Length: 136
Length: 85
Image (cartoon, each protein chain N blue to C red):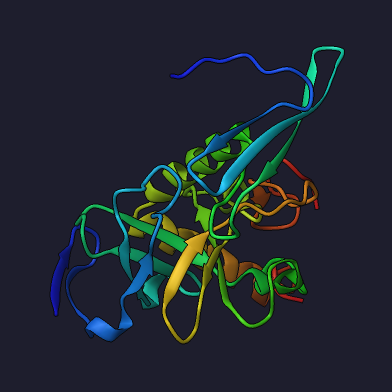
């Protein structure tokens, strides 16, 4: 399949790799199908790229890089990502630990959940000492 | 919006699988019991609002900002203050 993303230009993907969100993401419920794009320039981030809206993409990170053991909050059998609100300045950048993306590794069915754990902030600083709703 | 009044221990049913019951009313707070299938996420409205706000912030990120942050992270890591470890 071919897709043209505003940020990434021409993308080619296999239909089997499409991640399906039956309910979409919060605030973006109308878009259900995404692929994960690995952009070498922005490693370690990956991009959740809509294949229905050419302007829609979300940078995300493996949560273990930010908070070791985080997977235990969700369940170890799933692939887990947290979305990153990146500002040009790393100190202003945050990751959303409260509502991760959870992907079933076999079916590629995914959903964004909200964890019932108030110790996990929506805006967790990407780096120690950075600005977020919780210091680290 | 449908508006209706319920007394203590009364419930409402939404479809044939969702039940919302009034468990307690005290000092301006209402305690609700909710029964719903596992496939239905039951969430506090303000948390959904916040999740939407964060998603919108993430959706605004462009590739060059992400690359700048990635470069800063790599730089911090080589100086031994990175986010890993």
